[in-house]
Image (tube, rainbow, N blue to C red; front, side, top):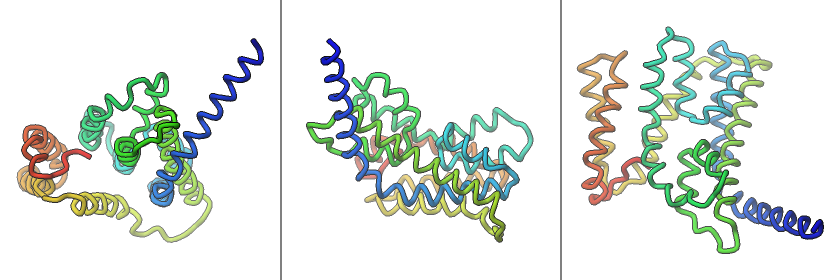
Length: 247
């Protein structure tokens, strides 16, 4: 009985090792990007007056890069939980589409499913959704390690940035532009990936219209609500035209 238990433990260990080795090469390109952005985020938090503990805890528990940058201004502003909730839902609304797409993929993954749901980001979604997992590798463990590795890269970057920002004195003037740069890069990457640019032009048009109607301080939430509604209503025709909606 004891030997049988030991044998099963060895099999499970081999199963995890095999899944880790299969998952790591797919996440290696994410390593540099996440660590660099995480460092920028940690330093940005420090320049805003927060100690290293904030980026470390927030990166581990929130794990939504763009929202974590936005959260800096929310923490510094007046207490407004409803605005924070609405803004968070809008910024991460694309995860609604991610979740629907992954319903079948996450079936049969057991208790790992909860972490897979929590840790799903753009990069983990792309890898887990498109990778042909080898037949001899456990699907659940493969997706678990993809998610865990990407999560750990982001936490490591934020930790390094938070500590560096608190112990090293250097000129951080202009670092606040990193969030703007992040969204510009995301937009350009999405633009280059699409065959047509209907959804991108829709987003730009609605944002510009809302900026004129509501002003610079209040246009974000109505713009994102209208964009989400338009993309939901136009999802099928946009997909037929070859435009990526959501991911």
